[in-house]
Image (tube, rainbow over all chains, first blue to last red; front, side, top):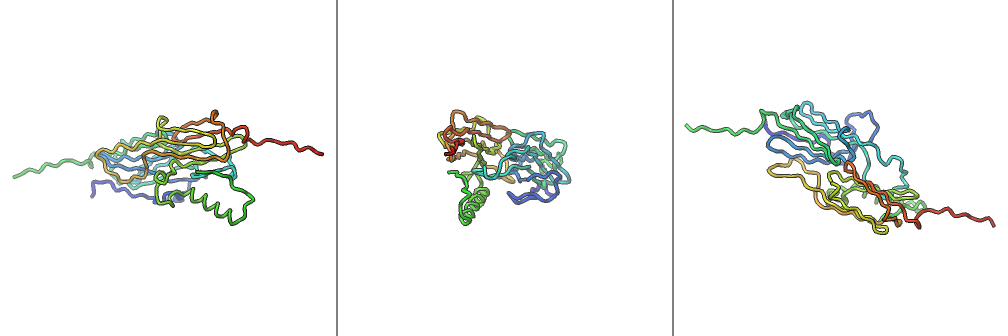
Length: 138
Length: 146
């Protein structure tokens, strides 16, 4: 049993629409860019979700799967296609799901949202923190 | 980058290459790099109505102090930097978010009134409203019956 958390990206496509589970809202969904960093006491996940505010974020951690969703209030909805001079991105919700393993201490998960960036701290459960084991010589 | 309106009178063949040009712009990953490396960070949407030209950019994690927006004549410049994450003694499982300096320069198809440009940054979204200069606004011309 590995003490390291194992990250696999469930949705590998960078810019495809997510069709895995039916959403009740009819809105486009995008995959946010993330940085995932392992620190001594756990994982740090940072996700770009421009347009999302703290009360529009939903985070689920269940059976080793971490799912982050950000709901984006609609923008640019009343603009006709012939009005655009340049259109490099679409506006929509964010969704991404990761397999992070069972070692996360659920009660200590912390999330912050600032300037459209969500930072998620996923502390390791106590039992899995690296411990120095001293070896006695005989 | 020079922006121009699509001409509705253009023949079909030319329209098809216009469409594929727009699609290439929409998908920066075909250039083989992240948006920041290909010079397309932040991603921009630009549109107009009779009175103004509007630009919107997604720049998550860029603070107000690290962003400069300027307008000269018909040229809009968005410039700034995004700070990297602190990374002392950490190992990355995944690194997709780019950090560093960025600049985007757009040449608009009309002159705008630089003194009255409004810009705001909220939740990582920059919104810019540029009123068209007086000469660039559509004017109703009476046609006399003679």
